[in-house]
Length: 486
Image (cartoon, rainbow, N blue to C red):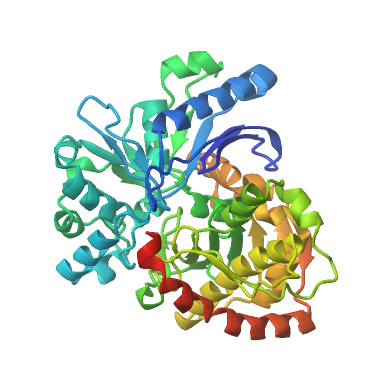
């Protein structure tokens, strides 16, 4: 028995998993909120993650105490890039600056100009989403607070510290800081020096399938474990999702329609492609890497539209005519800026092509199309970096919609496989890494059941290929307005 804990942006999810067949025996979740104190800012209180984790574990103890007590290991997954700052006493110094925060664009330019080795060492462009530019921003704008920083932790590393007292991070999550030498899988002293940081401010590094601490005695007593379970290194959310899918071999790929959108491809070696804003990170397993194209507002775009219209997402999707070939509109889903391929934290979203006959259903479909077109941008970026995809799994909250899955298959021109337990894929991946840390072989990572395959429909695929070319003209137009919207 293992437990997977996923620290997401919109919720914390915990899964209790049977080791023999990956059967998910029970789940618990708690919602999270994001604070936006200024335009372009995005923050969360780390205490909210911890409260949610404790409430989820308490719920599993109350509902499934006997099974939970048998768990031998815990695994952690988490939203990447967030800067959680602790002082010498372990006190949180400020709200965590999240992955979709755009305040550090100027610091990215400074870092790129000051450190010529950035791309070769980190494999990535300097983007405001990454952790290092956030600390440069803190140094410039909150210097007294910066001087007190003793540890910088990513979200799941903060939760691990609360669980075990250990400061440890895995390679996949550390890859998203711009402080890791991604090829060597170690902190880069050169990168740290370029941003005014020191190695002792970083957590220790382990592989995602390695032991990384044990649950404290107090928490073992609270949750009724028979013996203190070990805690695995774990993974950043996308790497955890990949482990949950069994995407561990070169060529394996998936689309994630979570708060952000991701197109993932597992690679056999470190393969940076910064010219197209493709991420090149360590996988959560030794000797394995991956490439990613990322859009910052995927399911977040639909959630935003639901809030604007005052309708729930399911009812909005139900309004769309299933026979509609396209919306006739254009939507740029740049609500929080964009990564692949533009690396533009300042651009903002917008609709185009509205007329007097435009309906709410048309606009909802345009939102879905806009997200799909950003994923086609990501696929083209991966292709330019030498990675050609033939098929992919599809996971995340957006994958609950057959309409969106089919649209995504048509736009990408790829067969997309919907898998069982796709909504808790990150927590499942974390539980699988816990099982490996407890001694199970890598061969135990079987692929989950594919419950449905969405084949691209030739006529729709041709239509969306043409529409995508037109849609790409929207970004330059929207970018013209970014100075007035930041």
